[in-house]
Amino acid sequence: MTLFDDFLAFAAKREFTTIVANPPWLVSGKTGVAEEREYSRLRYPGVRLEELLCLPVFRAAAENAHLYLWVPSWLLVEGLQVMERWGFQYKTALLWEKVRSDGATDGSCTGYYFRNATEILLFGVRGTLRTLPPARRQVNVLRAPKLSRNRKPDDAYVLIERCSPGPYLELFGTVERKGWASWCNQGADGAESLPRPRRKQLTLEL
Image 1 (cartoon, helix red, strand yellow):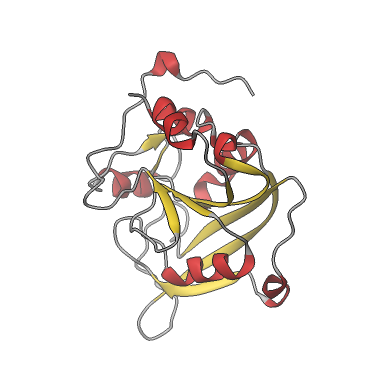
Image 2 (tube, rainbow, N blue to C red):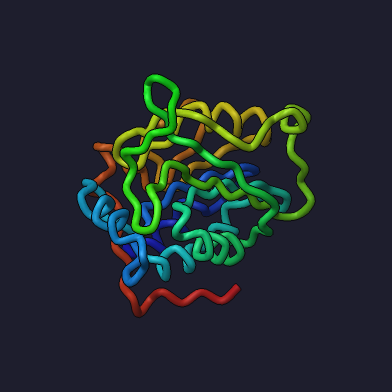
């Protein structure tokens, strides 16, 4: 089964108001050489841009829905392309600043031009859904330690639940979350189960 077919089967008769995606990006020929090598060492396979673009995420989204898409800074343009193809309009972004135990910015992160001590969480909307009232007081910067194996800070999900309504879906998650549905979990139990798309089937008409 391809990644495309697997998602269609998952999304059948399901509808989510808030979707979070944490793709294991794999893009060749970019300047983020160090980041690509880091992904290549992970236990789960990376997913190429053309594969992500063809995922029919809109099939699992409610008519009015939110999308939070994690993207490295060096793949910002590609992240915006993916968001648009998934049926969402970009609105703003949140920034995860990776910090050390003493609270200082973590300078051990890799990078090509600069050390990437931040990661971007793009926010997009399908339809006309506003964020919940607590979002009006929420700053768009999250400071938390760097985690292993593409895992994102738990505080980010607390923020999302506070600012966007359920039901919730996470794509390419790393841990099971109470009250959330999950597809293509990258955790230890699901690391070997990511279906690999066949290129000839990667065609999607919106």
